[in-house]
Amino acid sequence: MANLAAIIPAAKARLEVHRVDIYTPGPHELLLKNEVIAFNLVEAKIAKLGAIPLQYPAILGSTLAGTVEAVGPQVKGFQVGDRVAFLKKFGVAGNQYGAYQRYVLIDSVMASKIPDGVDSAVPASLMMNLVSVVGLFSGRLGLERPRFDDPAPAKAVNVLVYGGSSSFGGLSVQYLSQAGYAVTTTSSPQQHGFVSKLGATTVIDHTLEPEALIDELVAAGPYKIVVDTISLPNTIAVTSRVLAAQGGGSLYAMQPAFGPESLPDGVKRVFEAWPNSLYEEKNHDLREWVLQTYLPDGISLGAITSLPIEKVSGGLNGINTALDRIHKGTGRVRLITDPWE
Image (cartoon, rainbow, N blue to C red):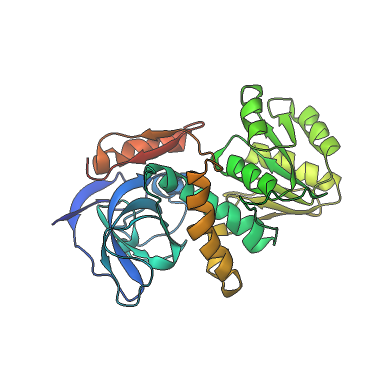
């Protein structure tokens, strides 16, 4: 049994495939035979731009799915042969935890069992953004969680989710609408129907000229919460002005500002690694619910809609291609690969 990994040797370098150790799980860890790597935008920014300082050589990657090969001595609820999906905690150091390899150590507290009959690629592709959605809206902002067995009553609370046809945006629309919140969002005209089916109350054309778009968004408010799921300079310029028009406040973003930015008075961009809120003691039950109930049941019941999944060929050798594509923009598709290919 050998382990291979795609390693980035230095900042902004191309990844290289090398043989690495097989790891032994610690007390609360699982050794996973990695069968699906799901790629995320932040990984492309790290690899291509050196956006986050790392100790090199490094093994990147945060989301994966596979089969449990070994179980740490204090782990409960998992056994060899279980299929699980996993999201690595932001900031965890150690190449043994990077997803871009065939065998990976994972923390059992953020592992979610995959239901029988479900393609492992589906929860792997959802894991990063779905856990982020729950971590932001319920873990950090205290909003109610949805239930599948009892539809939530409508609430007189309007939330703006800019970018409803993105992965994070679409999952946000579903989560909030399932919990009874009114959701205003944006999409292109071609995706209007798709976003509406996810549960959006109001969908506004993001291809409008900026001033017209801002006017439409302001008219559909006010909003209790404003989230910019795209978080690029051109979208922040719009969402920050919408927030300023209702007196300012926190603009929740999916990434930090990577350069100087000027926001309207009273508006503050707020970013953190949203899944990390689920590690807090006060959110212990919420973390267990999303991993043990919301994710597996939502997939099995068809209540969680994912973006189309596309497999990148070449396995570990194809990771550079995947990161190149993500960095350039993949549109409405989630990229995965099989590290054993």
